[in-house]
Length: 143
Length: 111
Image 1: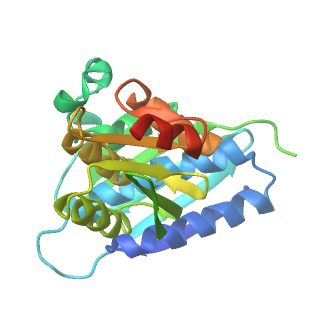
Image 2: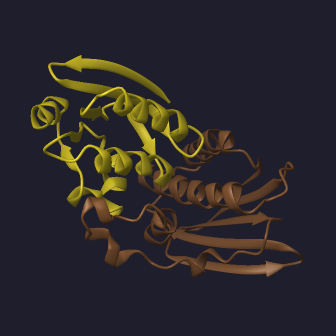
């Protein structure tokens, strides 16, 4: 069986620190490269932040299901939430804005920019009232 | 996240340690905006102990740079760790912010 990490994350940004700690522990246990762990943490953090900030308008507590699986040289990260339908792949890529002067730099869109830059494949689907985002990253040779 | 404030001549230096993510960026923003509202116009962030940053944290850096534009103000960043520096680079911030290898150089630029 391939190593996997499953986390139930509350819709509270205070959870992001715990997610990072769990991912670091998973990475250390399975010999992942530090850079792979750092960039995966960043991508997952950005996706969770978007969900926590924008997916729920009801003020209620929700659980976001995260599953990280290491299959050979690939990390597969799935994030599932029961918030409003939202396809993050529809967020406009930033590339042209990146070099604009400081006063004109847009504040939004950076999170998905990081996700696109750190993951090699992304897929979104809406299923049974849930948003399911799958991210994949090829990782360095394990120690 | 923890913030330590120091003064070097006309420059206020914030040493930010730990993680600046969506959960902690609010406190960082409050600190920066509070300083600016109180009249600080030369500000440096010492990133030597900053272990992690996400876009929510970068937003505060951009905000500081927008409010402290020369000649009336100056905002500089120094001593970022390699992985954090890479996040700044991917964000394209290296060309819009005054980023320096050391705290001393950042303070020099802001003085």
